[in-house]
Length: 162
Image 1 (cartoon, rainbow, N blue to C red):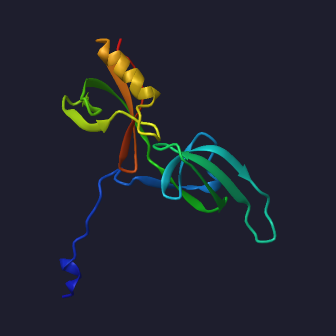
Image 2 (image 1 turned 120 degrees about the horizontal axis):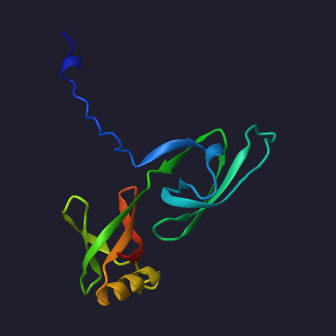
Image 3 (image 1 turned 45 degrees about the vertical axis):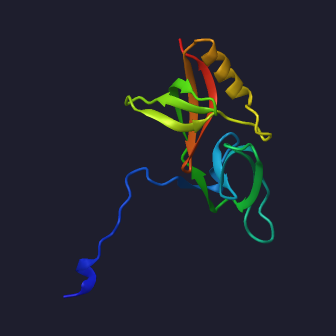
């Protein structure tokens, strides 16, 4: 008997990966792609013709979906690039603490308390956070849009609960 029978393999659940491979030629403006290990939204995409070195190249410029920072990459159109699995959820806001932490009511009835109001590069609340505070302090119900990708989450939008 061999020792192979004693080997156990760890398996991940369906959807456990944070990224999926997509051919660089299939990426379009407005879609998401990983650039320099950051999940980005593509703002500019162009291709060059096949040259003496063989491959047509894709020039991709994107903005980090969490920080807004600009990244770019050049890749042969026939090669695979990683595309982040991006999820958008609308969640009801229950409370905002004095230090900016939000208490959110999930669909399953549990609360989520680990997200903060978004801030700009100077550390001040951005326009989304100001809108959330205005609605909340005015006694109105607030729905926040949470963007999640690659194990990170951020509040990116809000609207009044009708």
